[in-house]
Figure (cartoon, rainbow, N blue to C red):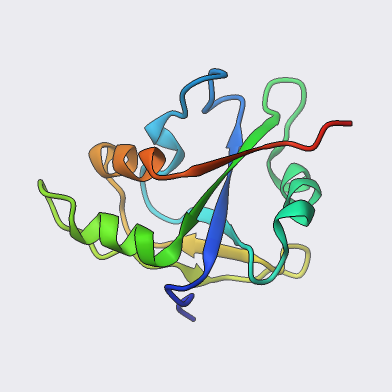
Amino acid sequence: MPVPNAENIVRAVTTEKYDGERISPSLFEGRDASVSRLAVVPLEDQWELLRRHVEKPPQRLLALLGEINVGTLARIGLNYAPQPTVLTVEAAPLPEFPSHGVIPQKITRGLATQIVRNLTRHAGPTA
């Protein structure tokens, strides 16, 4: 089921994809990028949920959440000059991950760079 353009989503940014300053475009490259819907699970609850799904200590830790609006994501895809791309987010809830969704289209490195530039970064809660 398509996620409405008005919704915001987050993508887990792990230490493998973040050097403390820059987010690697590989965060979105390829097909079926996994995202989480803020309309289902609020931002403050995403940290624990995503830690359970993405962390593999000590090498891979959750560093940031990257937030983007679904409509903004779609516009970035359509306005990508080298190859306009229709980007959508599909709801793909799992029993232990009710806010799960995917971006099913193939995203090139250049397009991924544009998406990363438009993310709102959220640092984790301090313990």
